[in-house]
Each structure stands twice: as structure tokens, then as C-alpha cells.
Length: 142
Image (cartoon, helix red, strand yellow):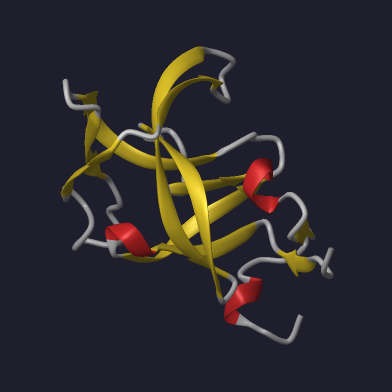
């Protein structure tokens, strides 16, 4: 196993497959999986998931309608303790200068400050989180 890279509590992530670049993401070791803020989420008869991106900071993404193959439906306990059935998709992301294939659940994160949440399943074996740091990827001196 290679050396783990130190990252901060907030980082930038790009979702290559969706052409979403430099999204602000909260690194959350309490969350099991990744989550992307979107709305109008539904799965059609052909197992495609349809959703609308929500990111007011990036106007070109806000309101953009997407359709992707469903990876799976998964029960997720949200931050308020409720169990939700969330669709997830498998996508390629660019994080800390490297590409990764990862699973991202789709949910409305309207109450949350960041459009993307990075969970511990993605972090495991690759990264260590220093909660005193932010945006380490922008400043490669760490």
C-alpha cells in the first residue's frame, strides 16, 4: 500500500463524466459514501436515473438536467437520522490530481453548504484528513 496523502476538511473535486469542475466538497469521515446535491431525481423503466444539478455558485451547472445509468438503489441514513432510498451512479472523478472511479449517491442537499460530500469509502486507504486544513489540492506545499 502506498503512502496516504493528507487532505483538508474541504477540498475541490471534479466529476469528469458530468463535466463538473472544481466543485466545493466537504470531506466527511462520518459519512459512508459520496453524495451529490441535485433535485427532481427519478429512475425510469430502463434503469436510468434522471436528475437536475443544483449549484448556485457555478451558474453553468445550476439547473442542468442529467440522465445516467443507475448503478444501484441503496438505503442511506442521512445526517438527520432518516433512512432514504437513494439512487447512485458510478463516475470518474478528478481529486487531488488523480482520476478515480467512484460511486456517488444522488440526493437533495439543500440544507447543506457544499454541493458534494466525500465519504470514508472513497477516502479509505488513500487519504488522511487533517481537520485544520482546507483546499490542500489548491496549495501543493502540504
